[in-house]
Image 1 (spheres, rainbow, N blue to C red):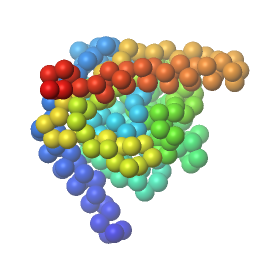
Image 2 (tube, rainbow, N blue to C red):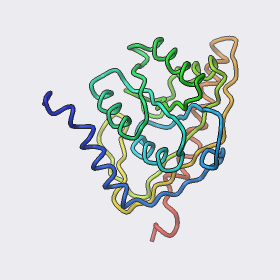
Image 3 (tube, rainbow, N blue to C red):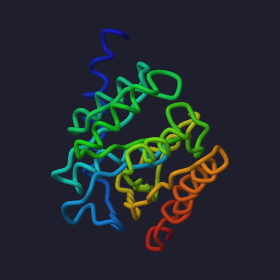
Image 4 (cartoon, rainbow, N blue to C red):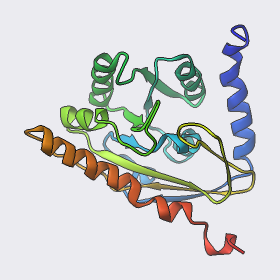
Amino acid sequence: MQLLRPLIPGLIVLLLRTLACTLRFRIEDRCGITRGAMQPFIGAFWHNRILAIPLAYQRYCRGRRGHCLTSPSKDGAIIAGVMERFNIGSVRGSSSRRGTTALRELAALLEAGDDIAITPDGPRGPKYQLSPGIVKLAQITGIPVMPIHVGYSRYWEIKSWDAFRIPKPFSRVTVIFGPLYEVLATADDAAFEAERMRLQNLLMDEMAAVDQPPLALQK
């Protein structure tokens, strides 16, 4: 298995690109990212919707440089390998390993003008619970957060901690690039928690909309 591990990212990308040829994307751009130059941002989306992100970013956000935060684990290395094949860099780190170092590296990339993508409930959950790291990064850098909402009209759901979703062939993929959210500075733990909850709620608010198939697909 160890000998085959380096081949896994390439195989995943091959399967993903093959699947993508059958998918119908619906993009809703509420911030202007697909329409030209825009400041760097911190993209936030839930872990179980990550499959559509490299496809949408490469196809609809051309000319931008992006990086994602991935776990320093072996599984994180596979994700990093997949992202690399979509010309998306990776910063390795989590709350339990390389957290402070990863935060500095992410801040430096944002300062250089690159975009950052984070799954704030990853890499181990709980599902749909936003970790504080993304709030800290936004406060340190002053860079806004872009909530990204992803929904599939038809999908398989894996029995994993995040109930990971894979769109079925010929399904519709809805991606909403939400308005930029300026994370507020906070003076104490209570205010920080309130800001964390506000950002978490922003990510949750659109879930019902993107998870509901268009009427034409419900027949």
